[in-house]
Image (cartoon, rainbow, N blue to C red; front, side, top):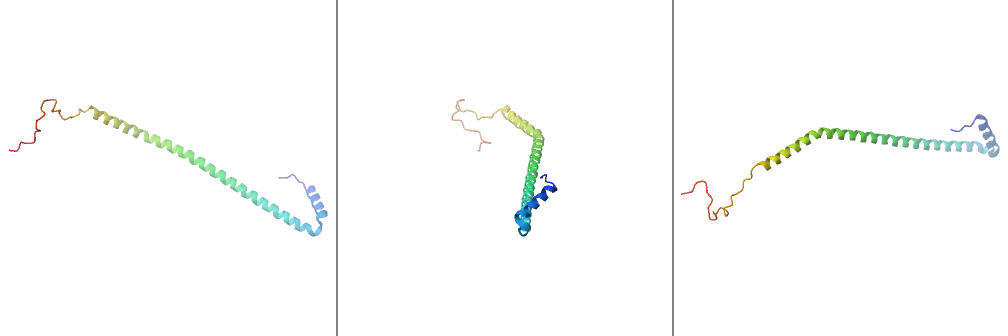
Length: 124
């Protein structure tokens, strides 16, 4: 991370000894060590969270691609049945429209306004 050699570390230690003195130097070193440990744990936690989010994002993308593929395959499988059902419904419509319609005779036009309908057998 930092490009600090042994001589630079030795120089920093000598300056710290002169500035802080022999009584406060061990406490200062321990405090600095604790701070560095907290920073390392925090950075490690952040890296873990970022890698987890990247993994989840990749899984979502993979699931979306798989869903699209399955949807297209399902549509391919449905297409023959849909075209058959459309053809069947068109044939039914053609059959219904080609059959002659049976309508009741218009008795008024035929001049049989007062005519009675014929029953099965006239009851005697």
